[in-house]
Amino acid sequence: MKYITSTDNNVEGCVFCAKLSADTACDRENLVLYRGKTAFVAMNIYPYNTGHLMVLPNKHAATLAEIPRETQFELMLLTTHFVELLSELMQPDGLNVGLNMGRAAGAGIDSHLHIHVVPRWSGDSNFMSVVGNTRVLPEALEDTYDKIMAMLEENSPDIET
Image 1 (cartoon, rainbow, N blue to C red):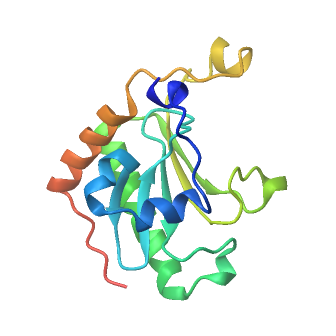
Image 2: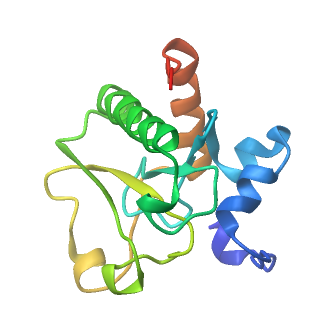
């Protein structure tokens, strides 16, 4: 609701780069969960479901070929770590993991590559999302953020690239 009623949604340049360059003291506000050597993890402010995360390279790049192998490796390690973390924390029936490269492939922001990690539950597609073309989340983004951060304190990624 805070996002919907906010009038300050204009970010110049790339929204993902803005999150990364912001002071770490603003990580909760920016929903940044983890900052690695070459990649970071943030929650999606337009989530398909509760717990929808994105794993992103620090480098502003639109395709996998534009990022170094070290970054590709860290992206996959972080994706794997957060899939396991969300599985344990949220107990979903499944997860969607993927990336959309280019507008035609469904990328809302196609200039900065990002891997989506979306927890799924049987029956999570309902009247609101199918007919009303809107999502209803049972939990505020900040509450989900706090739960994930508490879990991260117990189970921090061990990423050696």
